[in-house]
Image (cartoon, rainbow, N blue to C red; front, side):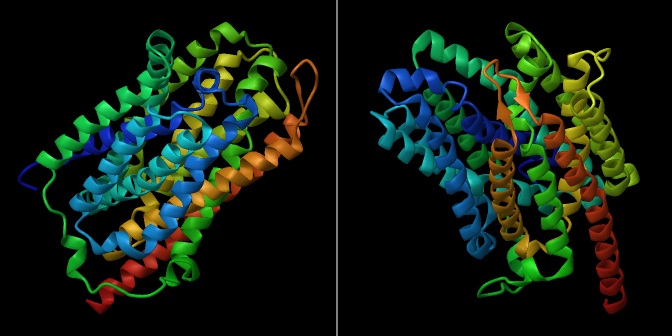
Amino acid sequence: MRALSERGLLFLIAAIQFVNILDFMMVMPMGPDFAKALGIPVSQLGVIGGSYTAAAAVAGLAGVFFLDRFDRRKALLVALTGLVLSTAAGALAQGLPSLVAARVAAGLFGGPATSISQAIVADVVPADRRGKAMGIVMSAFSVASVLGVPLGLELSRIAGWHAPFVFVAALGFLVTALAAGLLPSMRGHLQREQAHGIPWHLVTNPLPSTSLLATTVTTCGVFLLVPNLSAFLQFNLGYPRDRLGLLYLIGGTLGFLANGLIGRWVDRVGSVPVAIAGTALHVLVLWCGMIQPIAAIPVAVIFVGFMLSGSFRMLPMSALSSRVPVPSERAGFLSLQSVVQHLASAVGAVASSRLLIAEPSGRLQRFPETAALAALFALAMPLLLWRASRLLSLRERAKAAAG
């Protein structure tokens, strides 16, 4: 790459991911603000968040068929431009229909932007350094949690609910301009013959199907807990509401700092050992903090352990899954993976709402049973990654023998 160093590209992709994640994350926390301003019933706020997720899933499914047929640079710029315009349109909403329409459009462009960004990283960074690279890119989530969401809430409080949409759109415009000026043409994946028709092999062949199943169990297990984690901390463990923001700040900051170290560990020892260590930590946190809570362990320790164990598991899974598709199918596979993540998150969230019962005080009944189910999902992930790793090794040996 002449126009941009590998490290420069990773930070640019991280900036793109930051804008994309922030565009998604900021909406629900500020829901009461625009609900009041636009006369939207609070009970309908879930429709706004769900419309983005549903649109991203639809776009991801469509992207399986065409994303790998274009120059990565051009495809990313189109997705980013659509995301910026859709976010800006959110600031012009006059009611629930127009706001939902803007969020649907944002999901249609934001979903492919994520898949293309990850494909670029996998195209440029060799597999033996990809763990560290994924750590840099995935740090965008922690930064968005630590800085972006509180900033969006404060902007909404000071300047009105329109301000966060305008801010993210302006930031997105800046990042899009940087990408247009710095990213070179990326057509290496087009050198191979492009398959036509429905890519059934992405879900029927053992290697990609195993990788997608690992994504499914991991995401579903996480979303059995995440939508209700704040309520559990407050009403079951008695953590003060006014200190909740600080707790997320600490957890997000430590997660950001840990990503680089975990990524280097993945490069050094491989995805499977790191996933096993992360799963062990995750199950320990669930047992000591949620299944059989130990009162002597501070809530902050449980929360930080939950956040860190998430990085310990997601990073090795992302690094391994980036090796699964060949370059000519990489964006399509990652787009399909995005669909699986969105659907699995929806299944997990809906299942938790069916399992849990809220008492009048807000305390959640059956949370230990829900956490135990999440632990079972978590235990399946390293086994699936081990199988995917074995299948990758067999494919690489067969390729070497044939070549």
